[in-house]
Structure formats: structure tokens, C-alpha cells
Length: 364
Ligand SMILES: Nc1ncnc2c1ncn2[C@@H]1O[C@H](COP(=O)(O)OP(=O)(O)OP(=O)(O)O)[C@@H](O)[C@H]1O
Ligand SMILES: [Mg+2]
Image (cartoon, rainbow, N blue to C red; front, side):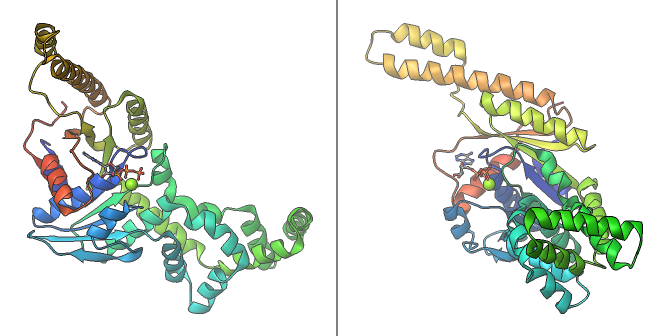
């Protein structure tokens, strides 16, 4: 593969990951814009975009369905801002046998208590949304922004979240007693529940039991869904793109992400190093010579600034070269720091053009 444009052309799903604040949301939106420009039907799932960017994409309000953004591109560009709470409601409704079962789960007080943690699990909701958009067949490319985390595996583990919930001891106990297994299992089950009631109170246990009882019959659906989502994440046309910054403090984290992705038997297909210092066009040695030559003159301040910038840019470049060793098969793209925040379509257009420019980009 030679460049980012080719990577996009060959992908059906692009997942932008990386640590906090490196530019994941910006890169995701710009990537979808680049795909729309190439004539594809692209949808980006954004997570907590900066307000100005969300407003200018027309997704200022949380909405769980894609909003199509009009513009001068041949394809389609759509975006949504993930609403984790209603996504969980959708998941439950999809798997429930009927509305009554869904209402029982969503109206349960125990659910309301855990839903803070559950629906707050943005990774899970993002992969759920991905899975839904992917099976709709409406999109040629789905770009997924990811929440800020140190752990890339949180996203990769996300599909299993609900099945893990159903591996919960309370669920096992509840289903065992409900299947009418009288005897040892049931006595043990009652014992566990009694102990729990002593710790957290009988009312809480009753609600928890009711919650897990309401799930009965849905576990196969959840397991199948988790399996197909994992397959989608592992598909050849799903590309992980690591967004990183060239600063030394975040590069270690970037390397750690790459290791975690590899540990999951996946490969980062792209590395976007965002906010590179702008090229000075002057090498470090030459900048140092100019600085020495102008010392004591009225131009000394500017020459020092140029020399410092050239030296810092050279350091960035050395660190990027080092990072690319950790992902030798990935397409490497450098995106310079723009003079302003990226908060509208013009800014995204600039980033999209930089991502897909024909710069030498293969790291191998
Ligand atoms: N190349 C760039 N030049 C200038 N500003 C940039 C660039 N890339 C991103 N930004 C700005 O940096 C800020 C952080 O970017 P962004 O929101 O994309 O990061 P993020 O990785 O999604 O953050 P978080 O982890 O908090 O979700 C935004 O204000 C964005 O406009
Ligand atoms: Mg973000």
C-alpha cells in the first residue's frame, strides 16, 4: 500500500484510536470527508466532538442517526454524535422478545443504577453503532472515532461487555433458580442471594434479580452480536489508524497502543502523526549558522527563533522515524499543526487534503 488515499479506498471501516487530545475526532471527520470527496458514501461516528466542530457539521445535538452534510463532494458525507444512553436502549430493544421485556429492563431501578456505568461505556456503544451502521449496507466507509483512553483494548474488548455482564454470578444464580433446578445449585443460589442481601439490602437484590430475570432469552442474541462484531473488527477491510502526536510524552503511549493492537492479533494500517511542527525549509545546521551570523544584530531574535524551531522540528522527525519502526507495515502520514483549531468544514478539508496528499508515506 502506498498512501492514505489507497488505505481509505480499500477500507470499509476505519477506526481512529490514540490517547487523549491527539486529534482522533479531527482525523476521523477529515477521513470521512476525504472518502466522500473520493465519491464514497461515508459516515463518521464521532464521540464528544468539540462544540464548534459539531455545530458546523450540523450535529450539535446528540443524535443516534447519521445526519447528511451537504457540500461539494461527489459522494455522501454523514456524521453522528454518539448518544451512549439511547444506544443502550436501542440494543436492549433490538434483542428483546417484545416491548414488554425491553420496558422491564429499561424501567428497572437496578438498570438505572448500573446504566451510568454501562451506557457510559462509550467503547461498547461505539462498536454497537458501528455494527448497526455496517449491517445497514448504506455506507461504503464507516469511520469510528474512539473515546480518550490509555488502553486500545478497551475498544477491542467492548463487544464482549454485555456477554460478560451475563456471566455475572447473580445472572447465573437467577437463571439457575428459575430453571427450577432444585437441590444443590438452587440452595447455593439462595445462599448467595441471602448473603448479598445482607450486604446491599434486600430491595437492591430484588431489583437486581428482576433485572437479570428480564434478560432471560436474550443472551444468545448478545453472544451472536459480540461474535459478529469481533469478526467485523478483525476483517481485512477494517483498518486501525493510530493518531499520535510527535511530542515525546505521548509517543510512548502511541507505541503502547501499537503493542496492544498487535497483542490482539490486529495490525495498525495507518499512523497519523498530527500537529507536526511546520517545516522551516532550513536545516538545523544552516539555521544554527544563521543564528551565529546574526548574533548581536537586530535580526538575532528572529534567527534564534528559527534555529529553535528547526531543532525542535528535527527532534520531532527523529521521534516519528522511531515510532514508524514500531509499525513497519503501516502507512505513515504527517499532518502539520495548523495555525488555528479545526472547527469547521474548511479546516477538515485542509486536514483531509494533507492526509491524502501524495507525500512519500509508506514507512517501509
Ligand atoms: N493539525 C491540527 N492543527 C491545529 N489544531 C488541531 C490539529 N488537529 C487537531 N487540532 C485541534 O486540537 C484539539 C483536539 O483535537 P481532537 O478533538 O480531534 O482530539 P481528540 O484526540 O479527539 O481528543 P479527545 O481524546 O479529548 O477526544 C481540537 O481543538 C482540534 O481542533
Ligand atoms: Mg475526541
